[in-house]
Length: 249
Length: 335
Image (tube, rainbow over all chains, first blue to last red; front, side, top):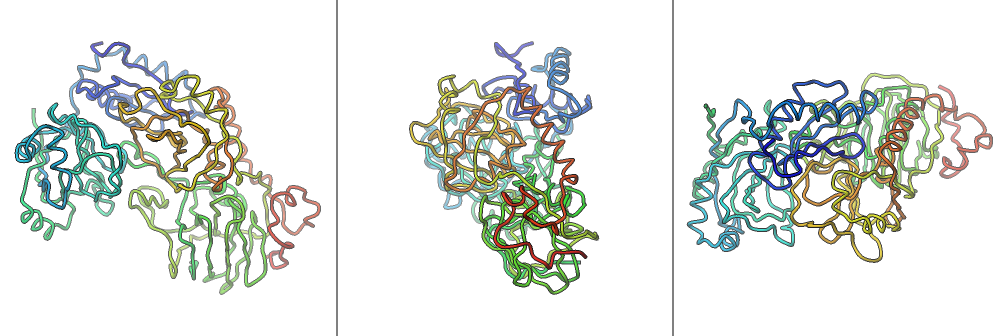
């Protein structure tokens, strides 16, 4: 298999979970492998498996200790790993491209200047590049519906802050390590707040409560503060003016 | 049927066994901090442990029955009285229409539970009634709320002896996939350290403090965000451990040194500020056996029910754990 040395690796999580990890650094093939492997585990429908999920480069499953054992699950996972080169797996079907209007900077997203400086760019160039980069949902996690997206260019491989920003609002677009996170709920964060959207990743009152899926792609297109305010004023669904289309091919 | 909330403490929410199956959407389980208490309440009322109850952090409230009902009180012992008469904790009591149940401050531990025959019947969300405040699901129960209650009958006047899980103590832990990021000397020092529960605690996690150095992992700042299991012990940048509880985030970048056994998690959640906690590593095999035994014991709880009408002096367990202040109330007897 075309993975990094020593991977994939199968390890235990707590007393009732297993984790199949495809890399210890973020890399696109490992992310694809994790998503595809998790989908395959779901499709297998092994008895005793309670739930599955992915992180950036791992697939996780939790099982019922009364119905199966570590030994049985471990055997099945290793067998399934052998069935193909997971690093070569295609992205999931039914992916969507989202265009989400974003205000970069202003008092709504006060750390744009700081992030641009760390990236060695002037603010306008930073906004142009961030706005034009089609990033992919690498995983959903931390909070309900909350995506980790990437990759951004290498110039945006900037570290997390040492201290935490006490609170960013829901819809905040934050940046670190060549990735974005789009916050589902207000939360403290060590990532830098570079943009603000009116997009709600988690819509508890709607039929479709969790909006984005791993594999979806997003363009955080720059809009003016005036345009943003106009979107906000007429938005009732939490769409934040987003446009969505199917990704074909 | 419903229960009127006349006054209530600041940290009370509706909880059940939680909401599973949404980890892939970033939504953690939530549910009661002390699952044992839900099972105890269910056994006392002879109903399903999946029924929802009111979880009360630190302080209870004042409740009025809209019709005759039966309630049970479990978890961290709190002062309780019905129309001015003291009633015992870990027991079921009749609450007549218009009667007032007053639940005061916690005496040991953190989370007390009020169960009602038929269960609290708020609208479920994704298969569970559990509030998940961090996710914006549900809310704190507040003064003036009327809690809907399901159909259900129960006989009052039962008690269940429980072990003291409300004062800290030893938590069993297993190594998890990131334990190896901590060198063996650090892991040994961790297992040999007496921690105190710190002031920072909520339904997402509790902070532990100790004297001496923190516990750092190799390459701590470059670790890829990974899956979190409830019970994981996470090291923050300062090397202070946090035990992650049912309302925690689903993934995180801080490394985790070990995972607390699910059957010891109630003890972790119920540990009051300043109380001592120690950890003991057990093998995965030992952990699985302990967990199975704990689950079997929960399934057999009903067999340990005892009538409250017995002379308390004949019930040694009751004397050691149950009596909060004064005698068993006569109003509890019979139906």
